[in-house]
Structure formats: C-alpha cells, structure tokens
Length: 130
Image (cartoon, rainbow, N blue to C red; front, side, top):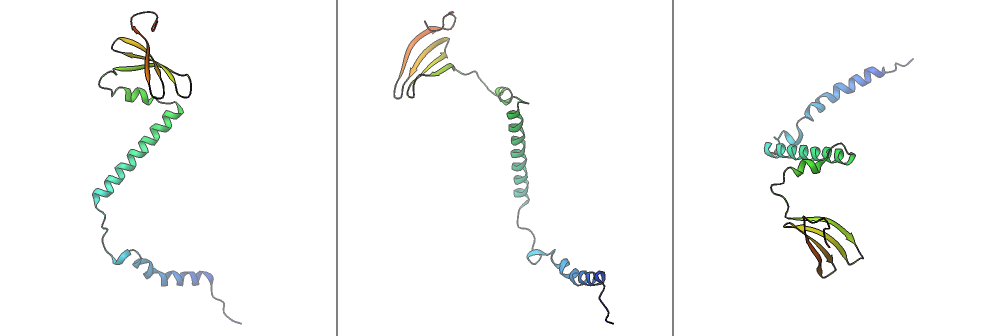
C-alpha cells in the first residue's frame, strides 16, 4: 500500500515555500522610493474631487432637483446691456429678433450677410414695435 499525500499538507508546504517570495515582492523596483511628489498627488486628488462635484451638480440639474442658472446667476456683477427678448426663424438664412437696449426695443431682421432695423420703439409703450 502506497502513502498518498494529504492535500492540506501540500498546500501548507507551498505556502511556506512561497512566503519568502511574497515578502520580497513588497520591494518593487529594488526598494527605490516613489519619485512622485506629494504636490502632484494632492493636485490630482483636488482635480478629481472638483470633477466629481461638477458631475453631481450636472446630474442633479438634469434631473430637475436644483437650478444651476439661479445659483450662477447671482455671480453676475452688472446687468446685461443687451437683452434678446425673442427670436424667430423665418428661413434657413433669415431670423427676426426683438432686442432691448438702452430703454428702447428694436425689431431686427438678420440675414446671412446683413442686418436691418425694421422698427424701433421706447420700452414704456404698450405696443413694443409699432
């Protein structure tokens, strides 16, 4: 009758043989220190955090939970001088726009290479561009 090796004993012997090799694997590259500066690591972390925050804000804005335009609208230092009230497409080369500037409203016809003022009125009147 021949003796059969015990499976647990073979696995234990393999672990004992591999233990010195596993301990030496911790010294990658011959035990040299990392040549990445701490500043680069911290700056990469900060960039990743900023990207993650922007992704969260974008997802919440797309789902309708927050209004980013209201948040960033507060950062505006001065009111805009030109306000586009309405724009309509007339053809592939022409648009008609209602624009406010300096207390006046202008009805503009915008063509491919030209722009024309169709009418002009004061903002205080009831009919904007008569």
